Image (cartoon, rainbow, N blue to C red; front, top):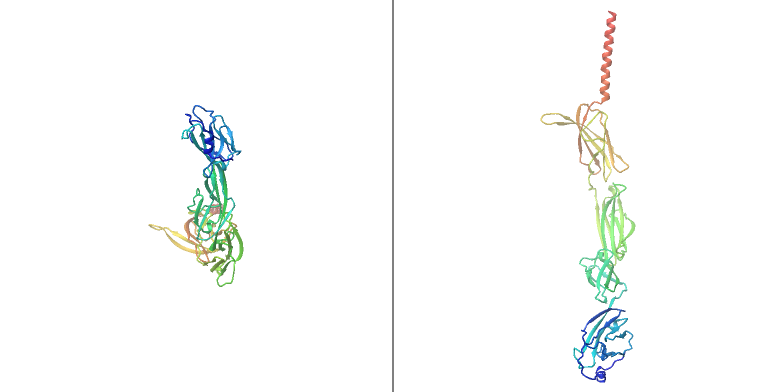
Amino acid sequence: MYSFKVTILLLAILQAVSSEEILTKAQKYEVPEGGRQILDCQIKDNPKEEKTLWTKINSKGDKDVIYVGSFKVSRDPHFGKRFENNSIEIVNANKDDEGTYECLLTMGQESTKTKIEHTLVIQYKPVMDTNPQKIEVLEKNLVTIGCEAKGVPEPKYSWERKGKLPEGFNKESHTNSFQADPDVSGQYFCTASNILGSISRTIHVEVKFAPEITISEQVSSEQPSVRNIICSVRANPKPDEVSLYKIGSGSYAKESDTIEDASNPFLHRYTRVFTVRDEKDFGEYVCTSKNIYGEGRKTHNVTIDRPKPGKVQLISFPQNAVLTPGSQLSWYIRSEFEINRFEVKISKIVPATPSSTTSLLFVVDVKPKMTESGEYKGTYELTDLQTENTYQVGIKAINSYDQSSEIEFQVHLQKSSSSCASQSLFWVLLILVINLYQFKNLRLH
């Protein structure tokens, strides 16, 4: 591109004062990178005027000549044709073409009517450093992540993460700051976009922290009377050791698998499990772990303070049923710990005025049976009870530590239909024997 002093050119080609003027107004053109743009310069009364000078103002403030009349001075291939209406074109535009362009009418005294300046802005999709960034920070410190991009129009930003973004995170800002804790570790994805395209960057945040420990109890799904003491540890970096033991016993839990967190690859989780089967396993348990940033320790006391058995459920008949001698009562109960026995209490209801009273007859123990579904079942046969009476039955479950609430219900005992039939047959036979005896005596006389 050639550069000439505009003042010299004007002296060389200036001939006379003209009444002609430029009609086109100064404009700001925006063209996508690689695109084409026409720069207008329309002249009053003479649209084909050859006495125009097109220049571009360079970074030093000097003017680089592009066209003098219809003659192209610049060798820059991005400056294309000059049209009959004095307009010129920019082709395959790039960032170097951005700037101020001047159209000057040379046949006249320089004024706002004989000169216009256009501004050309090159639009391009966002650009930024896309290399993955890794940030390591200690817990409770402030961490700042960002992904500033350049582009025209101005890029807009959006953020995503495998997991929940930290509290107060601004998804539309190119920079965010937040407090470092284990839950904010992970990958963050920043995207800058405008009408021409988008670009993304991945930022890895890794929070370093000492082991964090929790201890819990969990009932075995296979054996309701068995409990597992579970020590859970998370840390970064990986702990040097994780141990769970019972104080005074020398017993340590076996190692368990590491639990990986797919949404947060910088969190390392471990578990240790100790099984409590009976009273000898009761006591205080300790879980410890450490890494280069510190040590964690938690204790848990396992005692005999266990929930009492649940509620006894009848399964053979509804309450207040009418039964016959030999009828069988059936019930069941669900319990975390083994049921040792059921206690069955039978009382007779004595009618009285104004209300009935009960008289305890006897109490029996029933041995429970374990069903395939893990329930404890009991049965009792109603025998040695007088018929045509109402009885109150109470049943409760008892284990090694406590007992359930007692379920109470009433049953009315009446003679069975077979018993009534037997009595009727007896009286029929008795009458028949008497009649035969009387008939025999009549014949003898």
